Amino acid sequence: MRDVYVEDFESELFTAAFKKYFCEICTSSRNWDMLFRQMNAEKDTTKAIMRLDGNTMVGFIMFCEIELQCIFFAEKFGYIRELWVDRSYRRTGHASHLMHLAEQYFLDRKIPQMALKAVPNSEEFYRRQGYSVSEVIVSESNAIFTKKI
Image (cartoon, rainbow, N blue to C red; front, side, top):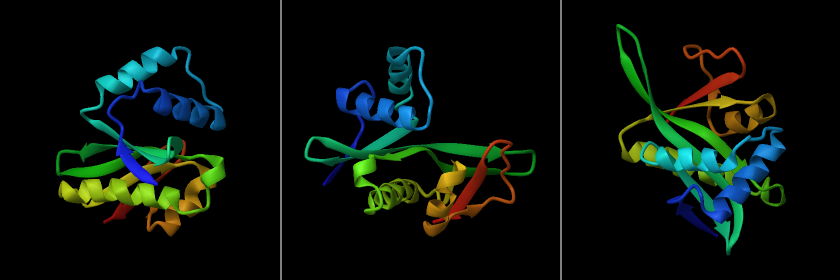
């Protein structure tokens, strides 16, 4: 197994995995080419790591830095945008490994707080990773989980 930072969101390996992920969550894009070009345009702020088994995509994680602010404070968070592992590799620790890589990325940048929006069927996984439902950050659609790292 090897972990590789995504340098090109339009690469065949990444686009195939991302389309598979979108299919699994019952989402589609009207214009895939435009979506991946936009992702490339944001690669200075949005990072991604692919986990590979030879030339086979095991999974990926996408993450970015966000800042929550109001008149009294500003807090930086590492934000997990997307996490996906191919069905044939699930329940073998790959998602946990990818989460750890993203957390380490932010720790290296002195950002010790993480946040993510969890869909209902993933909430237990995030709890096992040490995340809990945020009492401060609220979303109307899915629970926001946070963690101090």
